[in-house]
Image (cartoon, rainbow, N blue to C red; front, side):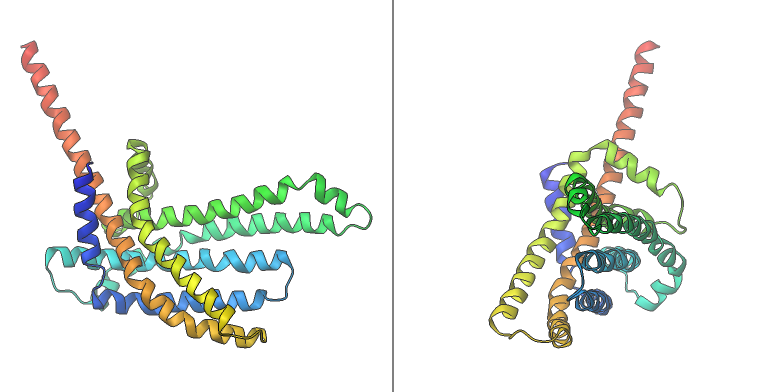
Length: 289
């Protein structure tokens, strides 16, 4: 894998990120995920920290399942675009329905794992409420909540890894197979650094755009809006969510485009190495003769 190859796949993936069909398909999905996030955030206003944490992370893992399913569709569309074949989204969805439903189930282990972490964290909050000894227990066992919060962030990172590495492996197959995890593991073992560079290249545009979108929303909230009731704050967030999602949509399309390009680059490299190994073996056998 060379810099030129990464440049080529990056440019090709980005050039096909502003397709109206894909944007029209993904935009309503992102709005739905945004509505869920705003709803949970509005509910968390005025609650204790334990409930606030649950309502902060849970929409992320639910949205991961939705984006996994959407990613399969986007990657199939991208394949048709690269090949220059006209396609219909409805037909792709019908033929891929089993795959779309199957991959969305991958978010359930994340949700269950997070609920376990959240429940254990609740135990530490209860220990803090014990009269006379609560502060002592909270101080002595402060490492527990710290590790649990770190575990929640680790699950968030795993969500991103699933979206980037699992989605293209699944989208190009006709059925959802159990050996996908083994294929991804073999790919990571091949070169953790190379796969990390590819993931960073895919996530960087989204990260920059999200940073400026959130910064703009915070500045608007601080300078334009006056403090108000949670309901009014939720409605304002929903109104800002529409342009937020619209601007973000092509960059998420690029993320899935680039994930497929990275997977194909990995397959190409593997094939070249296999061909080189066979050729070397033939030369060795010729020398022995």
